[in-house]
Length: 255
Image 1 (cartoon, helix red, strand yellow):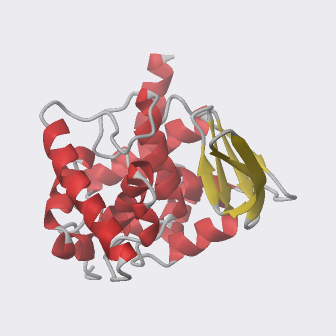
Image 2 (spheres, one colour):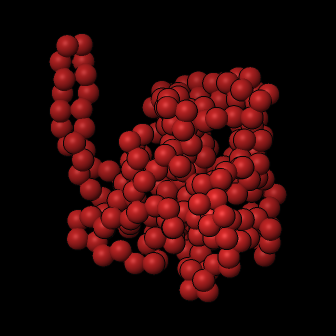
């Protein structure tokens, strides 16, 4: 198995798949040649290991699979991984916004209902995505929103079994991570309560897990803006992901 994975990781990405990454994952243009080679290898492993299911009448295509896989693997380019997202088995894709059952417990009362969603991540081996949102975010970067990055950040967060906004971190980063993310999280909550604008989306004020996912979206999708507005947050995120998209090629729109 390990040898097969090594072969897949070293094999060139099929030309048609590479063209899809070029067209649908503009964030990948910032990568160095070596980083892009790493991304391509991770995409090969991801597509070999994960099952995709079309839901709500969606017919799966290589464009859907490759676009999602490349965004998911973008988070892993600087990390040491043997297999992308080992706890993930299946990605379910709807054509657009889908309805899902949701519930909230208030004291001894359980309130059930339906909610409309663009994506969700589960600790039980699956992710759900709305393809129209994936495609919109993929082809219009720079707004700080990317549903694939968001949901796969949750997968990194819950790799240790807990959704707490802290993925498995390198030794020495836990202290700075807690201090910086805790401070910016509190700042975002205050700004949301006071209706002040913030570089991070207001949804990040929901809880620490959503804060990490929203911060990940901003780090990759609008890195220069995040670095200017929240340099401490940008620095610890860069230390974790081992990437520096704000100073990478094309991060400011240059070739």
